Length: 156
Image (cartoon, rainbow, N blue to C red; front, side, top):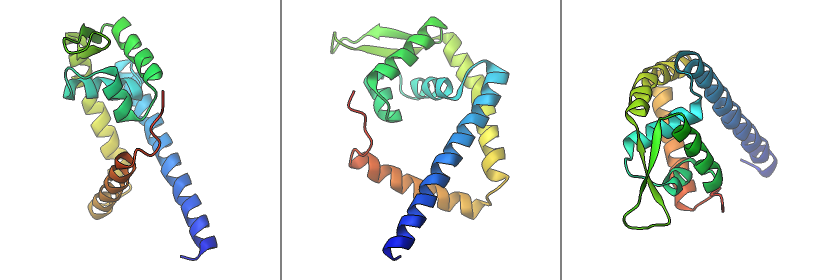
């Protein structure tokens, strides 16, 4: 691609990526809020805690490429709602290990069906299997490169 065409193409690609992400995030959030009383970010945190028992706030922040302060506030909210708990970290007194409570585990298990069914409907209703496979492969490759090179990693 020549310089001008590449710039226009990359700008359009960026707009498509961001707008698709925003619309999917919002649509899933609407379904999760209506059926389970949570939003997409809470579902993602709860799901990560389920899949990574004993993780730290810093691990969540790294996974979601958000600041540690914002992540800690999100965990605080999950704690206040009784869905997550901080435990002392025996290896480092300055950090805590995170765990789901029984209520949090039940909630994420119930919400997972809403989340996956919603994604299947929103993506599968538009893209066929080969297109979904190609999209998944391309995004995984891009994400791996960005994470490897620490692109877009918050500093705080």
